[in-house]
Image (cartoon, rainbow, N blue to C red):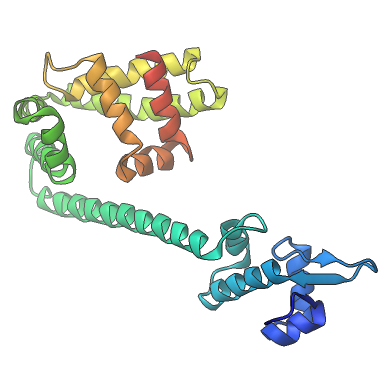
Length: 255
């Protein structure tokens, strides 16, 4: 049976980590030992297990500040922390893969429109937007709202005038700016948040087929934002971390 506690020198010899490194881990709060009656560092079994987690993460080239964040408190489970971290990385990879796909599509679209006149470019842009929506959200949207609603929305989109298109694009940018303003209040029921909800409702109605908008459907869409990493990545990247969560709260509070 192993020892119940170790001095800093004993733990250094056991782990292969220098005494100086153990002192540094203590200074930055990564591995904090107990103290004996004389004030000397003493490492118990929990600290030894934590050091094992730290060394495993260091072996995988994780930086110390990230290890500290992952492990959190002294009794954090290193394996569970890494599994959660892996899940976050996988979600980020999905988001990055999606962003790369959109970028390739945009590049292909630009190359294909080089010899078009302005009217042809605009029509192709609308067509590509519908195709991108169908590829990214189509199956989910049709399952939620039905083929008739999505087909109607696509037809409305394709029939949109250039002025209406520009208004839609401007409103989308204004919503992001208003989201940042409303977030600064910290109150999803504030006047700024109410204005945000109204702007978002107007933006949604620009996309949905005439006569299909309802508050209930909009609220259902908002709740779905939090379950979809693509929406979370879009709003959090545009307006700051936590933006998607605040937007949903604002919509549910004000619609």
